[in-house]
Structures are given as C-alpha cells and as structure tokens.
Image (cartoon, rainbow over the protein chains, first blue to last red):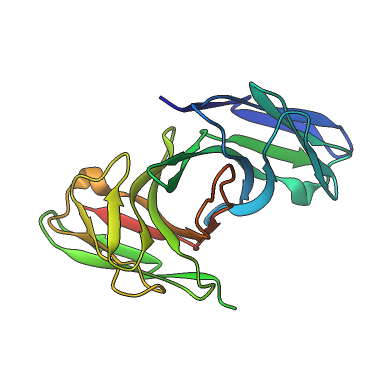
Length: 112
Length: 116
C-alpha cells in the first residue's frame, strides 16, 4: 500500500530562519512526487514535480529534492507570506490511471 | 482560463438529504477526480475519471456517485447525506499520466459541506 508521511506536523520559524520539511514515502512504482502549498480556505496550489532520485527543482525561496525514500522541501530565508500548509503526494499508475496519495501536510508559520 | 471551478462554496444539509457538488475545468484535461479533506486525515480520493463516460472508485467511495458526460464537467452526488460526510471537498484535474510519468493535478477552491 502506498504511504506518505510528512514531518514535522507543524513548524514555526522566524523570518529569515531557513529550514527543511520532510516527506517520506513508500510506493510501488513511483510515477512522480508532487509538492503543493495550501492556504487556509483554499485549494492546494501546485509547486513542484520530481520524478527521479537526485532531481532538484527551485522556485524563489523553495527548493525540492528527491531520494529513493524521501523528499525535502528546503525553505531559505523565509518570509511571513511563506506561511501555509505544505502537502506532499506520490503518484502511481494503476490500470492506466494516475492515483495520488497525499501526506497529512506540514503547517508552516513564519513570524516577522 | 478559469482553471477548475466548484460550486457551491458552502453548503449545509440535513441527514438524509441529497445534493450535487459541481466541478468544471477549462483546460481540456482528460483526468478529473474528487477528494475529501478532513483534519488529521489528509486528502483522500473519492472517485476519479479518465475521460467522458469512464469513472472508477477511489479510496473512500461509499455514499457518493459520479458521472462524466463531458470532458469539462465531473459532478459528485451525495445520495443520502450523513454527518460522517461533513468535510471539505476538492475537485482536481490533470492530463493523463503516460508511461513512466504522472502529471500534476490542479485543484478547485473547494466546497465546505456540513451535514447536521
């Protein structure tokens, strides 16, 4: 059974204090690992897709990396507007259809 | 492009009532799906569709029906609402995963449903 575990559940940082969020996964045949950002009362917003171990993607203060067992979302010098819940999901292809399994998310708060 | 749209944004039902949550996308995506999001449970797949006329069950399908008559629309029906269906519902769409790669899904703004 595909599983995704995110840690920590919640993280409070000061503005400018860099850190990393973790996403550990087990999946039978990874077809992609996705990071999303979700603001309160909104739908998840797509950030990154990673397909193979060693791959990295960057966007502004965010950088996502992937190994065979986990992914990290590194946040460099965060600002208060980076406060959100960050979701990780893994994709598998079953009978030609893609299915995503999500982790429970990390709630990130950046204090000014 | 409006992306993925959902209506209504909020809904309160009494136990036993039925209703349909609407979802539409204008990105010509083949794949559409419904999720529910509950505190501590993450997003869980209810039903999905890989094209018009083709639907299948996800992780938590009981109590919900879907149909897909067009590429753009994918409504979710609650036949007889129960308090356990109180949740936030998200519709998502994407291109179909092909071969070794899946594609990112784009989500709507959600419908917050309360069943009393």
